[in-house]
Length: 317
Image 1 (cartoon, one colour):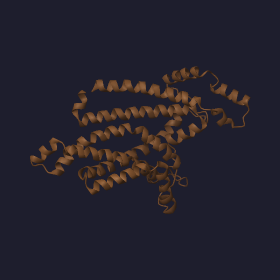
Image 2 (image 1 turned 180 degrees about the horizontal axis):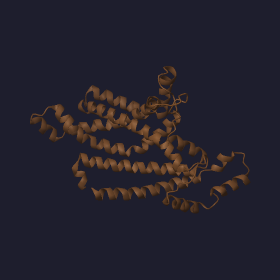
Image 3 (image 1 turned 180 degrees about the vertical axis):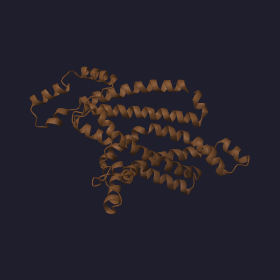
Image 4 (image 1 turned 90 degrees about the horizontal axis):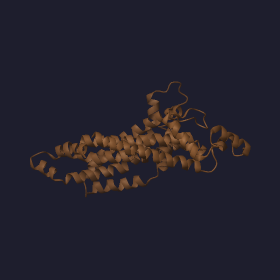
């Protein structure tokens, strides 16, 4: 197990270095620059040149790259060009909101995926499984921004039961957990339902495959009830691919959250990344990509550890 963790960490560090290098050069290669976002599009070339020199953007690109790594190794992520705040402080403020959104969406996806997948796996080949499969494909094909917009239109505007954006009610002096929960409901529902479309399908297929294995027939022949076999043995074994896919799906979940946070004007990392990309705020973009890459690696590592607990054979591979 320790050898597996060491190999995963070594691969993760190399992957993060490659990822950051690609993002660094791609963001710096885009036309314009943060000087135009700060000074405006009508800024004079002299003003832009002076600001670039003050921000350290006048140096050759390879020097900026090496300097960025040197600062990173010292734990310094720099300052936001646009907001003039330390990047660590800025990302920390927005990260808590995104974590709340992620945890809620993942829990919702897991609960619904397990329930739907069990029904789909047990009724494989019959009309309930076909109906669930059709609904999964339909939901999977819907764009994230469309689902979020429809939720805003009906739940927020037409019925008026939930807020359409933000994270708190600005008219309240001391917003409580209930207010936070109401503002989280629609973004969580949007990401969670779109996650269910893929996860439940994988889990349903896994349940069907497990039900066809010899150990299930042996357990039933020994007198165990189908319910006992399903929940005591099949469920545990079918969870392994679901856990792995959930760990690998982390970047996709974050990509969806960028759209969701923008649609709902939700102050999370996705919204901050979108704003920073528009203004070419290089330090913020690099820090968020580094953080998301690290969280993705951690998610995959946790998935491997959970699989090791679910299947002891994984510990010795």
